[in-house]
Length: 400
Image 1 (cartoon, helix red, strand yellow):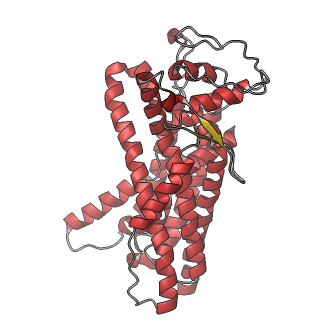
Image 2 (image 1 turned 90 degrees about the vertical axis):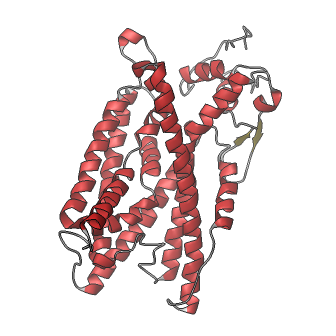
Image 3 (image 1 turned 135 degrees about the vertical axis):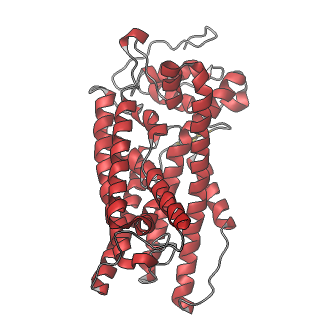
């Protein structure tokens, strides 16, 4: 639906980087800073609108659905460009996963530092490592990575989106409160002055790059669009979801960036929470950082699901008869949806079981199947509601 699409987009777009936009504003000043955010919002909106029209191919190509970014590249740009664009996409997703892991560990460490500053004073040497928190975040992701695909992680995106609103609102509220306490609006039109022109150019370029990185989600747009029901046409629903999500995102970015800069001026920290622009109330800072961590759990999944899907597809085609790779186990945890545990976490089996169960009255698992053939069959059925499955044919000729 539109709302699930909005949740996925906000989870992907609004990261903890929103808390560093005040620093970007400080480098750019009161005119270029807000204008840059509006420009990149417009660019992202146009790009997402154009890409959403690539989900279903033109009639001359037949009724083909491009369920991923790489499938669209293959259809419209040819096989040669798949290797180039695919490599860049997967590298981007992999890098984002690493960045989210590091950021989550910094936020968890900031909670420990905040408590230390509260007890020992703001001048205390409260230094803690990040390695343990990286390992802890990775262990949590091992569990959540068993979620088969975007279809089954709507609840996680909703939770992550709520966390985004929470810590963004806290950052905005703290900045607004400090502005009221200062009794004045800090900052200038030209931004933070630098000793040399080269240093100023470097800071401005870095700030513009941070703002540009805070918006795009095109590399996972088609994967998100593949979760939308039809009718109405998926591209119309996706455009509506993108418009609403980008509007919300831009409003949050402007509030956090502008009020953070107005509060600190040239002394704006790199991150309003982990940079300790605020020390009190410490419990609120801790809660905001905890919200960042929970959001990054969902954001990590949004960006790595396409990477998992590519790996699963490759292994399934390479070893189609390997029981270790293809056999799945369903586990149920308190207060959480059922998870499908597998050596490569193939989403195909789980989806097939869900579709067959309730339609045929039995939950059937195929021990010997071709992943791509089953993947195509299941997704052609869409949500499977009201659909009676008579036969599923595998690439080896077997029928179920």
